Image (cartoon, rainbow, N blue to C red; front, top):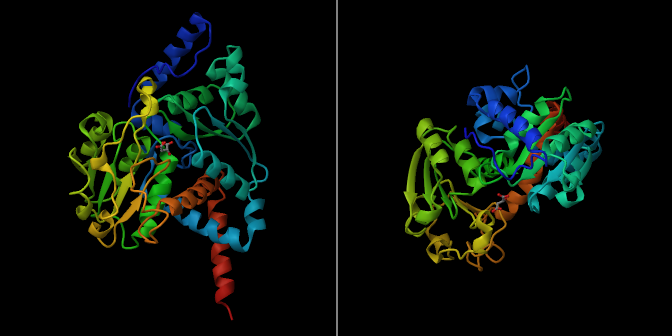
Length: 380
Ligand code: MLT
């Protein structure tokens, strides 16, 4: 657990107040990972905040995946039922950093459940512009909503939010929709759903390649942490030296006993070794904006002929947005069922609906309704 005061969090204009708050937040961060997890869990052992992939276990992931599957079917057959489930609940989608899919999939998922939802997509429209510290902004948001989904450039905004929310008695669920370069837990859930649906035989023993920017790819970090929950996983981190996996994630994999192989000379030789998924990512160059858009090394591009070198069960996916990481003839033009990137976009909406259903305790109702629908259909 890092213990930093990220400069990307805005502490307000008063140095005295900022120093006071920073000291309190640092105290909060000094807790052990177990204590932090505890702070994200309710008295029944259910997660009440979704901030880090390391808080997930297989039971939680199974619940989300099964609820997502059920929600998908119930929406088709009994949309009104689904929309009636969370009409009394509200959410603020607070995106202090660019987003297309994550924002839209959250918003659409919340609409499927009937939630009242608002958004802030540009902090220039918020009171931060008048000098309001982010701690006060969060306190304000928590006065109007039952839940907050947030994307933020700071690596520790998720912890900051949990700390700031813990200072009031409002019971608000917080969902990390991407914090800095560290974590993107709901993308991890949606990718896990895609992997699981593609491998009905189970994920134990499988190999996965994460390609591109392993250093700052928050989706990669969350995915790798989730995969450590399975037995005998082999993870290939396929990236040029300067974009190789960050130390924190590497240590995490080591502690969990997950095999990690770093490959720095290109993707070609790795493709035939993978029977789980090949997961492409772009260079996350927003983290060093002064350098502008950086060129992706062609040795790490997924080329058309690599489709023939893939093991039969393996899939190809990408969290998107993509640039040049996948050769142009592939995703729109090859009708190859192993290419999952666009299907994953839909999966994201259903897994996020399932996550909200879980947070507000209606996930069992969705699964139950699906069972009833199936039973009724089977009854002559
Ligand atoms: C993210 O927000 O991390 C994206 O989904 C992946 C990316 O931006 O490359």
